[in-house]
Length: 313
Image (spheres, rainbow, N blue to C red):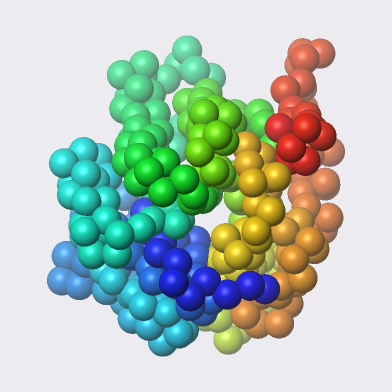
C-alpha cells in the first residue's frame, strides 16, 4: 500500500467505529488527520445508543499519533453549518490544503420496521435530515477547497455496496440518497480532478458491537457461538486500510462515482485486517443474505457498470 505523508484528511465522525478505524489507518500511512465529531473527553455523546460511551475524538487523535501520523482533535457538530465552515477554514489556514474528506457521521436510530404508512411522517423527515444533510454540508465545504487545488478525494461510508431494498422506507431513502450523492458529486467534480466514492464495511467489530456481545478484541470469536455472522466480522481498521489504499491510488479517479466494499478492495489492493485476517463479507455471508431477500415486484434497482471511466455506476 502507498504512503500518505504530506496528505491532509478530515474524518467527519472520528469518535468510534469506522471513523476511528479510518483515522488510525490514515495515520498508519503517514497522513495528518483532523479527527472531528461531537464526543470529547468529559463530554460524551448525550443520547441514543452511544449515550455515555467513553470514546472521544481526543482518544482517536492519540491513536493516529501512535500509528505514525499526526492526529488533531476538533469538536464539530455537523448539524451546525457555522461550525463546519469554521473547521474547513481552519484546515485551509493551518495546512493550506485538503486531500481527503471521509464522511462517517451517523444520525437517528431506526426505531420501527413497520410499513411507511404506519410511521410518523414528521419523525421520518427528522430521521432523514439527521443523516443526509450533515454529509452534504461537509462535502460542500470540502469540495470548495478541493476545487481550488484541483485535487482531492471524498469518501462516503455507507451500509452496503448495492441498492438493496431496506424494510424501513426512511432508512432506504437515506442509503440511496447518500449513494446517489456520490454519483452526482463525482460527475460535477470530475473536471476539477476531485474524486468521490462510497465504501462499506462488512459486519463491523466496533467498540459498541464488542460490548454488546460481551467480548473483547482478544476473545471476540466466542461471540460467534450465538451469532454466527460475527465470525465473519472485521475490525474498523479493515475499512480504514481500504480508504488508505484508495487515497494512495494515483488512478482513484477511475473509481469515482462508484460504490465499493472493504472486502473487494482488500482483494484488489492486497491489504489485511490488523489481526492478520482477510474477511470477505460478500463471499461468505452477503450472497446468502441476498438470496433470502423477498421481492413483491418485478423491478429491482441495481448498480450498473460503466467502462467509460472504469468504475461501478
